Image (cartoon, rainbow, N blue to C red; front, side):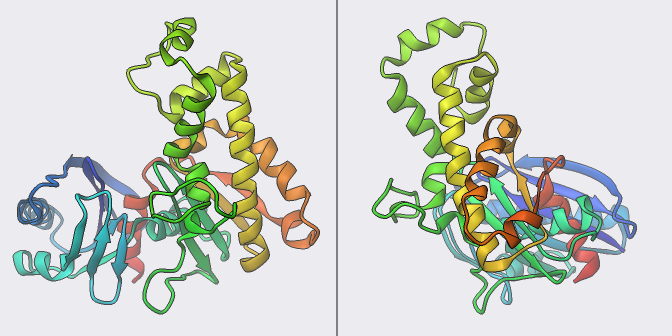
Length: 309
């Protein structure tokens, strides 16, 4: 039996194949045709058919960023997938391919990937923060994914950390994501530097075709005071989010994954400083904070999940 993991993204859809020993056999991706859901289903199904021909015995688990009904395999809403609403992904793919398919939130699968693939089940109580465009959460308690009664648990990016604060992409104000999602960091940076063109002339050796968290990381490496100050601010806000989770769930370990975690050297000291300010010390003192080394936790976690579901 081989596990086929699929992670649907706004630009590309990733695939991973894992064997019974949780070893990766292959990883690859294909473009996600956002304008046509029907073409998307056909493309995904064709890849699954080819993998079934190659590996014979397979199961498929799909991760997607959005509001997912895990029990029915329905994507209820995905803001980053052209606003797809109520897409019966499980049913539609199983029509095309004779194979069992399940569908889950991508952050749940990142959390599961951290638990089973990266940490080798060493810890049973884990909370994973996915740090990218948004902030997602995967919660593993006693080795099991916590989804809640209608599959929406783990939206830790949308806990409010600042009353009436910055606008979040979800429509609310003051969410953790509004400060620690990449769009929040970039917003703060653009407000801080003022004249963008004049500012970047100082750093002609950095590719500024677009401002993203990685370019802010490079600026901090060069000693840029604004970038360093932003990462300090980021760490303090993320530390508040982590602290809230520690108080509620008391996990053994918190995993930070996703592209933004590359800048951990600049924000980790301020996460620790923020956590040191919490009055209840026990859950803070004993927790470990781990920076993930696996860049594709969601798709790898999905593939591993097939073998354990």
